Picture 1 (cartoon, rainbow, N blue to C red):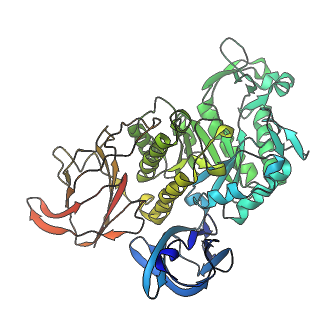
Picture 2 (picture 1 turned 60 degrees about the vertical axis):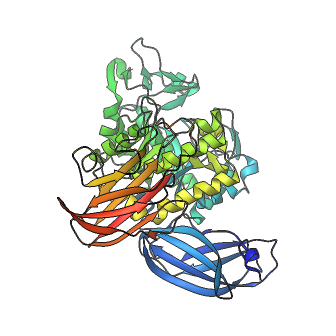
Picture 3 (picture 1 turned 90 degrees about the vertical axis):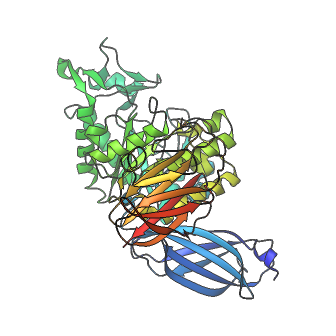
Length: 560
């Protein structure tokens, strides 16, 4: 078969699960192009851990069926790159890449997505979950699936929620089962203090009140209830969480809040007193853990810190990760970085940022696409995860997930490269031994890292190249995020970063250099980078040139 035809032979490749647990056989799915006549094909599949080849498989396969599956022996806990080459008479005519994540628990690397449509038409729809699998999303928030915020599980097959959405219980059950089959955990949304007005009317003493002694409402549909441990609501909402786990086999609870109130008045037992919610949230989280762990041993708890509040008290509570919904005044990439850095000082739990992108709704897909790529690079380079993608190739633009925006197939394919990149190099991006030295080892009098040939900055500055430097005793990890031609407001549309001429790096090294390689989402597989070691006034200096910067370029230096 002619090589130019063989380049189009494969439509897609991806792992058959979003995440594999240790000991599971890995399956790589090959989707063949149905428009090309059946033929026997010789392929080479290489599995790599960072820049080292882990294993390779060469075999003949055929495209006579819709899909082929290549099985790989159980892999050790790591993120892996998978590169497939097609041969025509011993000549490589096409290459494809994907990535595989193997973990001991989903809690170690929580890549969060969302579902929000559960109508009867969705009962047999599996494309939403399968598309998230291709993004390696291993936890799915079932958003607004419940009957009422105070009465989560409805026994009727079809019902209408408080926002007027039609819900099918079978659709919910089928999607939970589909998540499980595809290596994902199903997490049930459940606000911690929102009750319907009828519930409030029958439990007025359990509500929270403002200083004018008026009940506190949210969007004129919910009344905020008192979560204090002595309030009956406290045990009521935990029991509702338990019902969701028991009846529907959810794997955990997304404990949502609205950021307001922070303090309120309680009327329990006619003893009006101030309730400081930042002190009450950890008690609720801990008691929820105690009760739900009796139902499902590996239950997952996620609590929403709206606007980065109150992370100082909730991060140390008995939840599995720290989830922060980002709002103004956290408006710049530097604020994104500071949220991650500050949270890391509080805990070593995984960090998830929910940062929704209005540009997709207000400025169009192109402006939104570049904003998404830069924000993704910023969050991953700083060692955190991003809740932004999910249902039906959907991207979140605001806090009501039902009103998501669907992105095009082309953009979805581009974003998949970023998520494959995250998995391929996850053992670097999420290595807790790597310390951020961006502000102390470069610029000014700091000569450990010197960047030349363009405008660079240790912070995210408009029209500059942002350098994020993390290092350990044996690794130096440099992320270069190209902001040339763009500002630093993360929730504003962006454009293609301006390309630059060659840049030069001078890096002090204290040990023998074993390897230097460079990569980007567009490139995927690492490419060895030539370098020289010269003697300088402060010791040995590694000198290297980079001829082209992508929007996000990563340099890895391995030391002996």
